[in-house]
Length: 485
Image 1 (cartoon, rainbow, N blue to C red):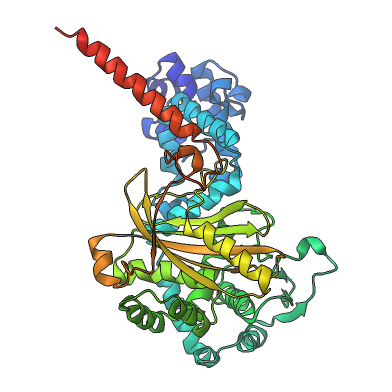
Image 2 (tube, rainbow, N blue to C red):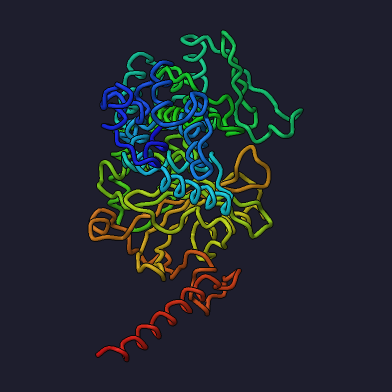
């Protein structure tokens, strides 16, 4: 209707006079807030010179087809717009004020997504990261839910909390059936940590190859789903298929709950204050903390991203998780979080070679060498002050690495990078310890101008193109300056 009215130069006032429908009601129709009955549609069709069937057709003209596809898509209906303070009706209003321009914009975004192989799931992950970053990755409502859960389940207050305690709570309170099972009969499922079969009595299958830490996190997440009454969910521990953004968001909430349950806030804050006061870098102390809380390196690092920005004010940080298949030189960045800005590195550079000077990658190489001599599930910890060529930023990067269970021959590293500021230096006393390696680093080999770099794995194609463009621009400015009077 808006499309026709705009094309014919008919104002809402003119259309109201022609149809006898009020201007306000017509405006509501165009915003998608009112759905007129058949008699009013007939009046509108007559006034706009089209048939009734044309006006109720789902087809827009070809120029607006990307807009129609978006409005009919799961992406539009699944995203929790209210989380970002946006009403779907208001969004439609913005879209419909400039439909042709918005359609061209959406078409451009789709083309970019295709070129970079970005699917709906990638988009959902990006939205989730934005949601976390909006809240500095600290969610007081979930923290409070954990406190309430402990109050009604005395077993959770035990210092020696174990997977057996969590099993008892799920079985007694939520009627779970829990089986530790080998997935060896299904090789494709070996990397999954758990599978939930949603019967009247939920049946939870836990991969028997999991460590005690992994079992506790898995059971804690199930408790989070149940205690917070999160219904829309996936039934596998790793994503096989994301059906909706709600599933991804609820998985995050349940995982946050588990991390906050297993690493209590007040206890962890006390330990963090003591660690940050150390006058020298002591990686063993950090590893000891992971053992104290029976936490995997990732769970531990994720918990730090919850607490450090909130309680220490150090919110200029990033979190990265890399996977590395042993005996290869390939590294996959499969999880990231950037608070207070998108710092390098980030996962948009999937077709480029990440800088081989990063501690995130070198710790994985070192771990593989250790495992070649003595196979184990040992956790190692390293730190590095990374000074970026391109931005001049300096980050203190702390990495933890270990083998991934139950995925064979694969290691993972998690890294927290803190922007080195005056406030950071005040709070983290060991930041300039001589034992911490200081390195100049790039982002990717393709973007880096460090020609002497021995670790380079690809030519600086993007850097060279940028340099060439800048030289052309400088020459143009010089030429034009010669013609000024």
